[in-house]
Image (cartoon, rainbow, N blue to C red):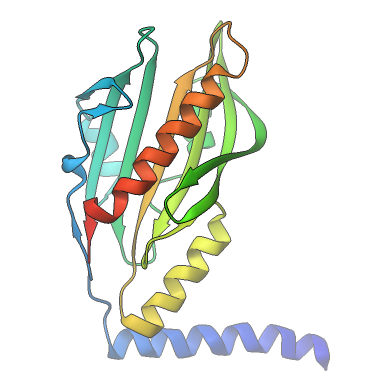
Length: 207
């Protein structure tokens, strides 16, 4: 009996949410201005990268920014921002994207960074191909200025905001840089960029 209830409750909840979404279609609730991300971050100059049409079609995003910044030592830092309306995740699993390009991936401890809203974390992994190693950090920006690293938390946040305020949008953030011979350097740069970008997101996604 208890097992049947456990199966029944999620189904009923989905039905209720479905009826609500049908009766009250979600509004966008925010204007995306990803292109306003500064071309100078932490003294590093940036340039927009051309986006392949296949990537645009595959992502089917509502707004997209792919920008390359150069650290003082010339090592690149990539910033990818993908804005989505409604309850999509904001892109595919980045590990799958790297693996499809011939990389192997290795999970790392969550990356800590200090944003204006407090200490936050990003999921982190290492992507390797031949002699190249790229440290990658990802997190989501949800309505209300929430920064979350966990996919399930992001989904829950979108569900709550959709029910409470009829707004379901978010930004998937991916920041990466190459590992060099200096231990901890790539992690430090990724953390600093994550903090800077996180603090700028409220100005880029205007409610």
